[in-house]
Length: 490
Ligand code: HEM
Image (tube, rainbow, N blue to C red):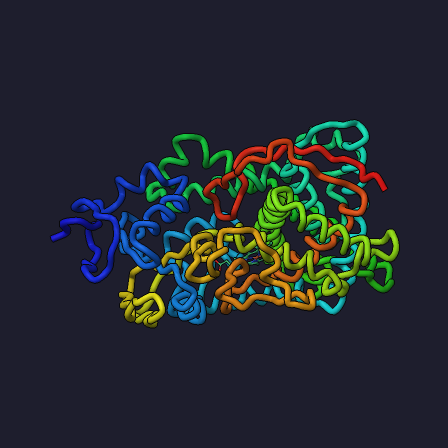
């Protein structure tokens, strides 16, 4: 009954795809690729095109739908007709946790998005984000200058990860996590938060295509390491929250006005959220904001060091726009079209979530795509639809003949103004109801940090050869990215 597919799945003779074996479907092809699924999907996509199918335990029937027209349809119906599905939800419920929009669908998802909204809608968002950046950027630049003066080599990804944590921590709590300081030697100090983020992210993404992760993780010690790392994150959030609540209640007892402050924590306390809701939201923000910012800083340097004319244009823009030594404000980023174009182009080639999936709660039909000669596609209730932003955003069908080339110029008009690409053609921040709420924040962070570094420093990778990414939730660079910082001779 199941000649080439996983037991319980329905045959799909109308779709191409790699041939499986009875009962197990494509599991034997997937097992060696569990930790490199993105590359396996690239290889299978090169053979079968943008639409193909495979089956495996715990997921069942998977249909790969690598075209923006299908994504547009799926993502409009996200959280209701298409949900994350049990296989993925089980992983996200462990981390970032059950209170997170990543781990919920339908009405629970709506409540979780609401919990997170005070952060993105508070009136003084401009002030709190700009304040955090104003504090961290001078420290980061001083650290780079100290590395330049000593002529030391360091890992740019280590630097970027620490900047990412520092910015998030300051925005969340209005405090300095002391992850980075003006002396480059801080990069050699172990940092509990950075290590915990790394452990939670790597373990979670390694679970995605491992149908028996609950068993394997228990026996190889991963579960214990993961639990410890997750506790570090929740306890950090919990202890800052307890202190803040104690401070607020002593101010109230004294009969004074409580000064809530302008950080995310204050915004959430002010909206009446419970302790567990606040801690869950803070951990979600760390999960969502850390890796992606680290990655885009790394991949932008990688691309810019191979296309130095764009680096020169960014530097010219930074010199022209910088009127004083202060860090640019949140509202100033539209004056940096080249920085914006580089940010978007980096994310096009190295998207935030390179592969993703949804579970069909109902029977559905994906629209025909006549330009690639594909008729409407039936999706059965219980199927998973999978897509690879990496595949689509490097696809010549979607982005034209130079799709694989780093060319920020595609996002600039003739007058040099930035043109924001439409979603879901540009899908690095997702689309539909689950569109990334941190997109503007990340854009600002990117522009602010590069505009502060470039007038003072050259960051030079030691090895300019081609680099690859690891298979993880995000486009994480494989290995260290060793660089030297050099003071700019004016
Ligand atoms: C370059 C930086 C970033 C990129 C490329 C990025 C990308 C994405 C993508 C692709 C999604 C959709 C995932 C899905 O549909 O399954 C997403 C969701 C999300 N992002 Fe971002 N992100 C970035 C930065 C941030 C930051 C800085 C924050 C917050 C501080 C943030 C908060 C979130 C949240 C909370 C969600 C969950 C949305 C939901 O499921 O409703 N992101 N992000």
